[in-house]
Image (cartoon, rainbow, N blue to C red):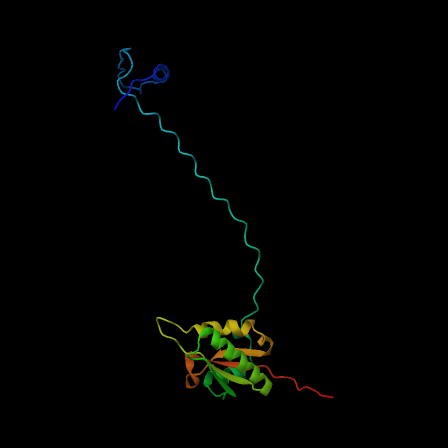
Length: 184
């Protein structure tokens, strides 16, 4: 469907046409100053607005520096060597294999409390290896639980267990020695 141009549109078209210059080397074709064109020209395309850059959010506040992981605590060289060779006999075994995360965390806390009270030094914490498609979540959380819990000051180190004590599905948890309490 076409419509006729209004007088304002015709005047505007004439002004635009008067500013057009032919390209160099091309023949100039004279248009007859006829009446209004039969079909209207589409309006010239509007330039696209420049995309605005998304406002850059301010950097997050510096996070509190987490305490160093329990696994990085250093032991005497002979301790590490004996642990690697599987020559250390654990004082206690904490088996978390098969528990849910919440239950395993509670069992670990109670067992650590008992071990500290009894003066145990080396604990074997069994987490399970998991499977290739589903690794053990308890094993993944163990270092975080120990590093952020109330027992952090009591823990000297966390090391992977020797294959005779469970290998990849277990860890040695070495507790610090408790100084003898002098009761008066």
